[in-house]
Amino acid sequence: MPEITVTTIVVLCVAAALAGWVDAVVGGGGLLQIPALLIAFPQLAPATALGTNKAVAVAGTSVAAVTYARRHPVDVRLALRLGGLALLASAGGALFASAVSAEFLRPMIMVLLLAVAAFVVLRPNFGTQYVAGDPIPTTRRRMALVLLVAGVGIGFYDGLLGPGTGTFLIIALVGLLHLSMLTASATAKVVNVGTNLGALVVFGSQGMVLWKLALGMAAFNMLGGWIGAHMAIRRGSGFIRVVLLVVVTVLVGRLAWDQWLA
Image (cartoon, rainbow, N blue to C red; front, side):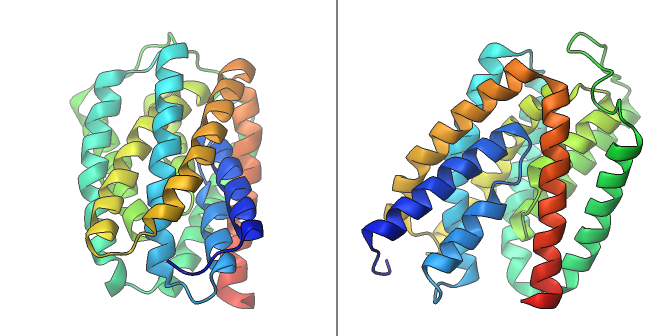
């Protein structure tokens, strides 16, 4: 592991706590954690930063998932089915990551995120008009679409690149299954555990994880995840919608910077 100062440890732990909070509410904690790792260790290979981020994030998302499950209704069967598919798809994405240029993917992701932001802004009630007790459509065609998009597609994307996975999961679950933002966020946490585990197995097997550093950061990420999940449950879908828009805006800005200004 690279040499590390006390100041660097403190900064990385704060970043991990904030990332855990963001991930628990709406996803996108990697926006804070990955840049923090790359700034702290300029010579660190991007793949090692991604692998270390996954090792930290899996702890925080697990705590958030358990917190949601205890305090808010979650369709466990749906979440586990999606999570299992996402785990396998994410591992495939991580294996494929070295063969695809991130510069090629960023513009497409930005367009998709801008479309998501516009959709949420133009539909003020999106995700807030549904409540936990609303029936979930369970036709075979709709469920197959959900498994394909949220389980396979977004899972593969998380292993391949990653930014905004939780955000995409929430949008997919609200749009396809008419879940409330809160229920979608809770379900997304379970799926996100699967995507993080799948990618982590691949990165870990290739020696691309700073395990000692990850363990320390994970404790703070778990704390942030616990706080974020409780805030989301207490404040509801409207709060999650606002955080979603903020995260999407920051994510687009970050990707634009990487693409054209960095």
